[in-house]
Image 1: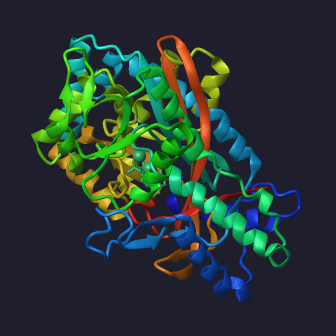
Image 2 (image 1 turned 180 degrees about the horizontal axis):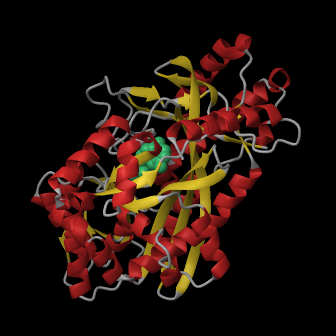
Length: 499
Ligand code: ADP
Ligand code: MG
Ligand code: MG
């Protein structure tokens, strides 16, 4: 298919969806309209609400905002009203959540599969190599993780051309925005409740978000499985974190609802202050660590020296429950996502045929760069693809002319570097006008959304204690942008108005 015909299909579908909305609403997926005369008032009310309810981030213009809680706060970026969202996608994503949780667990048990799939990547990507080295050390030691905790987020976009919900990626480490995602639902409900008549909307249709409550519950349940009253939950953090308030929502809930103490430490602090006892107990601040909850450690920037790698190894060797273990972390690699999409690979890990079908149905096109014909197609029509390295946290993918030039260079060099990347079909979600609020002012822009479902999986040996969906994250960004993270500064928090 040529790029122009695909583009036309996308635009055509989006228009059709808008036109059919209301008459039974086939695939109504668009921003709720804001009456122009209400915009200024709603923006002001929303900004006040954010300040009063902790829907905040650190302000990058304030030098201490990433270090000192309560200093240099700014409201989190948000869309002014929710997005209308068809029930079918919602239900599909909910159904997939426990399947992906189970899949992560099963793939994590197959150490050989992880090592083999990433073997070529390891040679050209030193970050992946360091993770794999820790993983193979654990395999050599025959280290068993009896209690496993996964706090996941499976991200999707609706493909406008086919109306299909397609998975963007599956996150297994430091799945963030679970705190702020709850806040924006409450914000939207509040605005709609106060303007119910003028907006003609029912606040009850804004889907409530259970991410904080359920992730706190899962962490508390893991802590309980560790079964040591004096133990703490260790939150691994970056030295500077302007997204700390998102994290505080979870840790405060853990304390208030379950009486579980958390301590926040950087990798360097863990290396300096932590002690690994001969029986495997990790001690910090004089307390045993029951659970290590990573909200850092997903990016090479989090390991500026050998000190941080020593910390990661110490954690992995300990008897603490790791959220995630090194194996769970590796399962989230883009290369693994691409391998799982190959024919007959899911069948190695899942037994039930209908589960396999459901999972496969949400896979977009995914290819290794060893596939010459796809590389040629991507050089010809780069706008239909995304080139992805093995990185997390947003801002790492390659698009458009850059993608073409990178592929041409890699092909010319004939180097192994191709193993550092995967190619993915670019998804074009239907776009609609949205009021997007950042730093106290709004822009009106054509916007698209990415929809994530949080999951929790807790297992002790053969017993699955939790395997559930845990609320959602909806992020909206200008349709003209490529990337989409809130932390990375591209996207706006949003909520779902179920139709
Ligand atoms: P990360 O782990 O860094 O979040 P992602 O795979 O989620 O990596 O990519 C980052 C962003 O790039 C996504 O949030 C989305 O906005 C955009 N993106 C990724 N894959 C696709 C795709 N196949 N089609 C369209 N946009 C994509
Ligand atoms: Mg990711
Ligand atoms: Mg992502």
